[in-house]
Length: 140
Image (tube, rainbow, N blue to C red):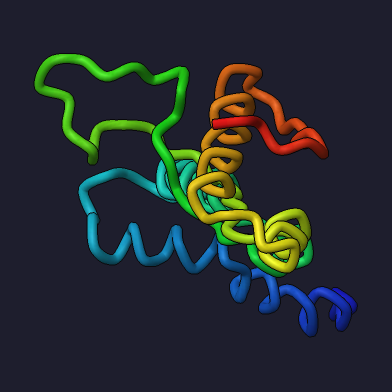
């Protein structure tokens, strides 16, 4: 006589409640000709991988920043390449930081503040790594 396994009986249905299982079920339901459970599970893993790559925890964003999906720098433009065919990467944009606030309070003219923001943007782009802006304002 077989002894019932109450642990599996109780916790096995929780596996079906995972995001991976729900995505695989939805793929099987909407695209029944794709294949069996192995293929749909693989497709679900790929979908979840893409979603996780584009999500960032809110804790990593600070006041004055926003998350934007930008074009991947390693996926160069080419002829007949549309925006839907380009890889997207999450980018954190600084809209406002403490240095901008200090410049506003010190009554730095707007053209000079904008020039400084462009300078910081350009230096970050050329170095491909976040850099801290200099404490002196460049003469524009």
